[in-house]
Each structure stands twice: as structure tokens, then as C-alpha cells.
Image (cartoon, rainbow, N blue to C red; front, side, top):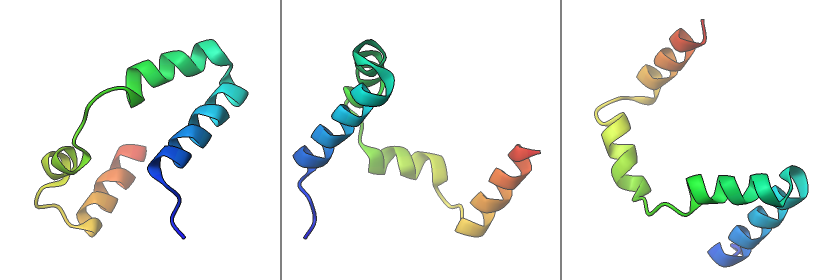
Length: 64
């Protein structure tokens, strides 16, 4: 059974608070999770026309 998005989000927030403290967790959430973003659109813009092999090569090249 796949957990609901709400349950996953709640667990993630609790984990952030436990590991980082309330202040850092709040900053992270404000800066990252609260933004309205269409992941599929962003993914298409970032990786358009690139194969997995090409992305892998780019990642390996940037690690050097």
C-alpha cells in the first residue's frame, strides 16, 4: 500500500524537526517545500533531450 502524500509530508517534517531543530526545519521548509513548483515541468527543462547515460557522464564530470 502506498502511503498518502499527507502522511509522507508529516513524517518528513517531524524528521526535519527532530534532526535539525524547529528553527532550521522552519527555514528549510520555507525555502524549499513551501514553493509552488511543477516538478515535471522543471524536470523537462533541466533534462530535455538528455539520456540517462548522458546525465551520468555529466554528473561524473562535475565530480572531478
